[in-house]
Amino acid sequence: MATTFSWLAIVAALPLYAQQQQENTLGSLWPKVEENYPGVGAKMSAIDAAKFNQRAVKGNTLPQVKAQAQNTYGTYQGSAGAFFPQAGFFNVSGSAAPLEGSSTAANTFGSAIVEWEVFSFGKLRKQNEAADALYNKSVIDKDAYILNLKKTLSERYIVLLYNDAKLQWTQKNAERLDDIRKITAGLSASGLRPAADSLIASSSYVQAMGEHDKWNGFKNAAYIKLSELYGNDTVNYTASTFRFGNPSENTLSKITSINPSHPILDALDKQSEYYTLSGEAQKRSSLPSVNLLGGYAYRGTGISPNGMVSGTWKDGFNNTTNNFLAGIGITWNLTSLHTNRMKGEQLFKEAESTKLLQSQYQQAMQADLSASQAKIVQQYEQLRKTKLAVQQSRDAYNMYLARYKSGLITLSELLQIRLLLEQAENAHIEASRDYWVLLAYEAELTADFDFLFNNL
Image (tube, helix red, strand yellow):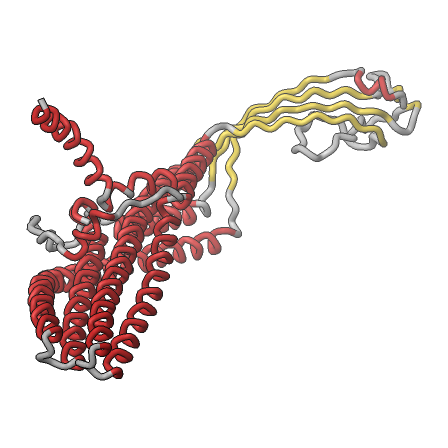
C-alpha cells in the first residue's frame, strides 16, 4: 500500500512539476508583459486613433449639411430678393421701395444648405487611400514595438541571470577562501604555517565578501528593471539559472535572409506608401471640384407688403417668405496651383527618402544576421570549452587543496590555483551571457523569439 501510494503521489506531482518548469521559462513571462505593459496599450490607442481618422476622412465624401437660425433688430436698407447667407452672416436686407413707419425692424431668418462634392479628380479617393495607409502603418508600428519589447524583455532577463550567476560565483569564491582561511588558521595555530599566511587568507576572504556584496546589488537592480516590464509579481527564474550556463544547442533550421515583411521594414514601406498617396492627394487638391448645391430658407420681417414698417420685436416673425435653391457649382482655387504642386513634390521626396532608408535597413540587417549567426556557432563552441575548463580547474583545485592540507605546497601556490579556477568560472559566465545576447539579437532580426523563449 505504501508503494502504491508513493507511485500515485509521483504521478499526481508530475503535471504540477512540468507546469512549474514551464513557468520558469522566459516565454512564460511574455503574455503578462504584453497584456499589462502601458507601452502596448499606447500603441493600441494609436491604432484606434488612426481608425477614427480613417472614418473621418471617409466622411468627407458625404454631403455637408449646414444650418443656421438668427433673430436680428436693426436697419433694413437694401434690395429685395432671396439669398442664403453662410452661418455667422446676418440678414438685415429689406425692400428697396419707399417705406413708412419705423426706421428699424426685426428680422427672423433660418436656412439649411446641402453641399455635396461629387467630383474632385480623385482627390477624395487619394485622401481615403492615404488614411488607409496611415492605419496600416499604425498596425505595423505596433508589431515593430512588440518585437522591440520582446528583445528588451529578453535582454533584461539575461542581465538578471548574468548578475545572479556572478553572485553565485562570488559566493563560491568566498566559501573556498573561507575554507582556506580556516585551514590556514589551524595550521598557523599549530606552528606549521607562519601567521602571515593566516592574514593573507583572511584578507582574500574579506575581499571576496566585498565582491559578493557588489554583485548582490547588481542582481537586485536587474530584478527591479525586469519587474518594470513584468509587474510586481515574483519572478521565479530558478530553472533558467541552470539553462543560462548550460544552453542547449540551437539545432533549428536557420533563417539566412531577412524577410521583407519584417515589422521594421514593413513599417518603413507603409510610411513611404502614406507619403506617396498624400502627395498625390495634395497635387490633386489644386484641381477644381464639382459640387451639387441645395438649400431652403425661411424669412420673417416687420415690413408688411403695403410698405408699413413695424419696430415691434414680435412683428419680426410676420410677413414670412419661403425659398429654395438647387444647382451645380465648380470651385477652383487658382492661387493654390503652384503651392499644392510644391507640397506634393515634397511628399514624394519624403516617400523616396523613406524607401531608400528601407533598402539601407534591409541591407544592414542582412549583414548583421549573417555576422550574428557566424558568431553564435563559435560562441557555442567557446561555451563547450569553457565548461570543460571549469570542470578540469575544479578537479585540479581539489587536488591542490588536499596537498596544501598535507603541507606539500604553500599558500601562495594554492591561491594561484584558486585564481585560475575563478578565472575559468568567470570566463564561462561571460561566454554564456554573450551567447544568449547573440540569440536575442538574432531573434529580433528574424522576428522569431520561439527558441529563445522556450529554452531560457
